[in-house]
Length: 286
Image (cartoon, rainbow, N blue to C red; front, side, top):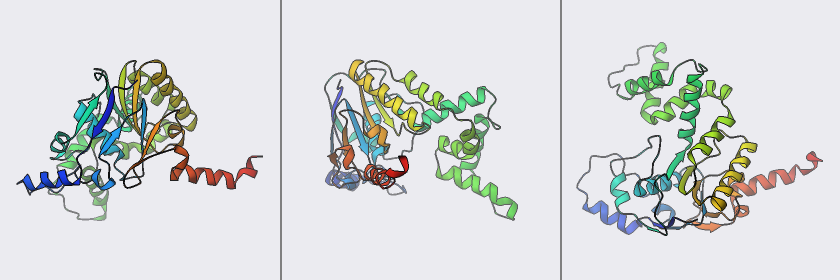
């Protein structure tokens, strides 16, 4: 099923024209301007399953967030955005093939993490509750008068710098990562996807492989393939997991190329690296 047929991002010329029209000069960042245009990504044409592949900084998450913002899709957690995010989204346009279903949504790894964190909190499995860390995040984020006076202040300084550099969800994840790693449950993460993904929907997934073992990733792939084939779902997925990249009939955009190009999953650099590694060690599996 295809609900979203095409999506258009502003090219470098349109971005330049917009910047000339803006009199505001006091902002440190104009994100998401110049991210996707730097990759030559001006248009995406969608299949029932479309995958955005690329390394860190390639713009795949930015593209998902812009599409989700423009379409007004539901989402559970906040995401990084600047004062120019709405301006950028206003320069984008899209072509629907069918009306976008109301329950369509964006699903990120932060959503899954927060869900798992809530489960751990309800079960008493985390030493420090999420709400306490949320309050700590706000306090550290707004700290302006902290002074480093002794070595004992380094932990406090680290927390303040962490809060200033990360979103709320990522701050909580960083502060609890050791505890969560010991107690995380792939079944809970998989359950989150099966609860949020319903029939008749457009779903934007940002790195769904996070928190899932290889076995659970393959199970999620089968679930998404069946959802697209039998239950009228459309997926746009940002990933670098070889299991997700190998989804049947997926259309893959390689954002590591400039301009971004459609490629087969077996042509992608990270997949070739896995292939070469296991080929070199093939005898060890005999």
